Length: 207
Image (cartoon, rainbow, N blue to C red; front, side, top):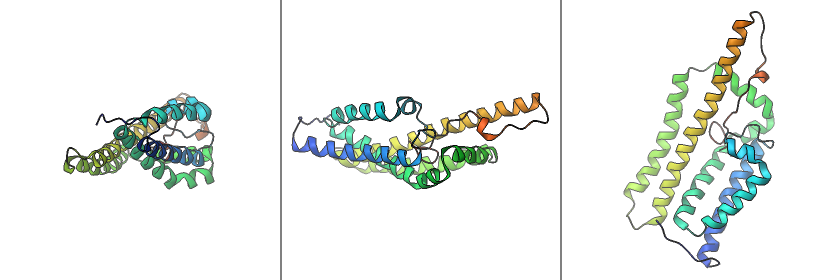
């Protein structure tokens, strides 16, 4: 898995093209879903913004293309994230970032945590199982399927982590609101007052 290629070779250019496409789809799907990054669940990506984020990814892609196995892992995870983003990007774009966040907060508020965690586990573990199976049943010398399997597992871990991070932020904000309402009976705080960061790449798009 430590195989490298030389700069400018046909294989380097092929891997570079795959990485540019995969990362480009991730950026495109994120932009469609949340052009202002209000729903971006990755705090680092959110802080970098579009300009610095594109620059950093360009540098990473340039160097990562020297290591095809690692590049395939990243490309696989990126394509899966983009596909997940596209699934709900139309809804986020049509509702607007603020309205979608408000709607998401209300759905979290009305859902039992155990049910949510069970569904999240079903989503991530079943997907990771495919990746693990691909890794396990692939010959040790077969780099491509093993790397793809690792990419699927990486995607599943990212979905689980960022979804839990987003939900934790939402539930923390809800508890804060409940404490304020307890201290000030008779008042109601609008959902916009909740300080939340919804993870869309994981909790319905944007990884």
